[in-house]
Image (cartoon, rainbow, N blue to C red; front, side, top):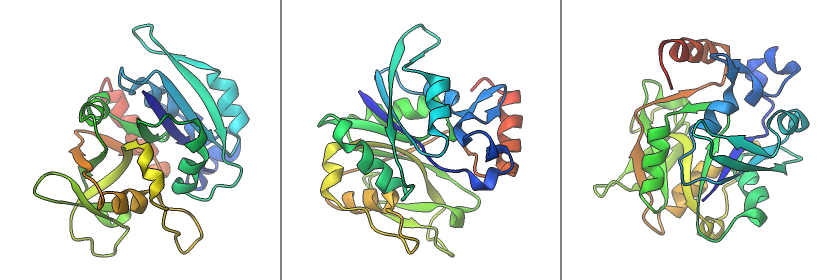
Length: 234
């Protein structure tokens, strides 16, 4: 199974740390964030495409063409240049020519995920979105879920969101996602989350509740991640 890992952003909210290195290579708990991402990939993943942009050559130079899991099994790594960072939907479009026709995993390179959560999403053997309860859902996209446990709609950053169940940026998608165009945000970026939400209106997309998730969008969240990793074995 293939994975797409989004690693093109400039990480402006983590400056000055990102002045010299790309966000995925910022160290937390003793190693770069993206190493946790790769280590968390389910056993089904044998190939990963890393979408790079800002200081992408540094990411490529650090990781090389292979990542070896703790059990010794390798994951092939390839790189896709996103020359202009026009949003997550644009990053997915850049990956399109490289993807097989079936299911694939897509996730952020700068969030911490639990391996069991990603494994549970993949085990559905169908499209899925990882979700989690949040005390500040207005900061994220929220997911409306129907009685069957499937995504009904994804609403991006509403001031008074109707639920606290947020989209955490990890998806099991099918190549059919490209039938649905990504909505354009006011800033001109293509929005993947709303694309997935619109896609979910045409076919079942499971909502899989995660046991753990730690975004790293700013210096405060980086400090929180450091404390979590110091106290755990994620």
